[in-house]
Length: 244
Image (tube, rainbow, N blue to C red; front, side, top):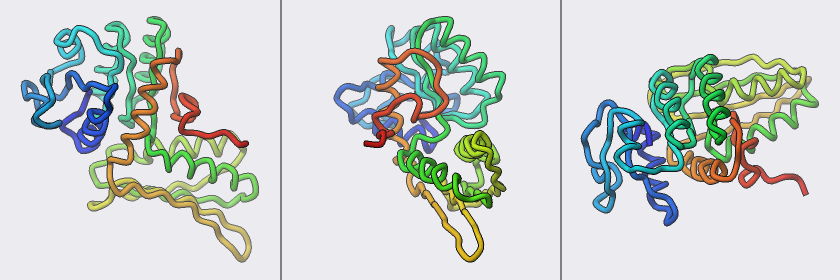
């Protein structure tokens, strides 16, 4: 687990640790090297926080998935170590450079396993995107307003870029507006306009615990898939019900 001392990483790690078939065996975090996992996950947790993925892996001997919620530079470097160690990389870190994404894709393919970089693990975000793409068939005027806390580095967010790219693939263009402000977590509004009316689809994450269910679903899906994925809906249909 990378980024266990961060706000999102900690919420996700705590949720994963509650599952009977999941063990958080070690963590990676430059700010917390040497600290025991029980400091983050409670008295029943075993293991330590290490400086890098290879050290963490060597300490446990075997692991299936490496989950990362750090920052872009660290995530790219850490995740690239995972495939050669036999771990499936699962990244929720946004802002990773296209060339680093391609390097990770190549590593996943070379070692014949699975991996993913997911822009948003909140299941509600998937459903909001699905509704937005459906409405986009009928509206030409589209605006996306995304709101995040002031520490969010990338602008626009990976979630908004993903939606914008999907709209462009449909031949639709959206104006994108980004807000960074203290007190916010993650929020997105998609507005559709025509003469005399508007429609707004809005998704609000008020707690980072919202991401945990999607991470759990993605990690389980990676265990039975091969290839490299850039969206949760492509990785698993378990959280993306098909019509009918």
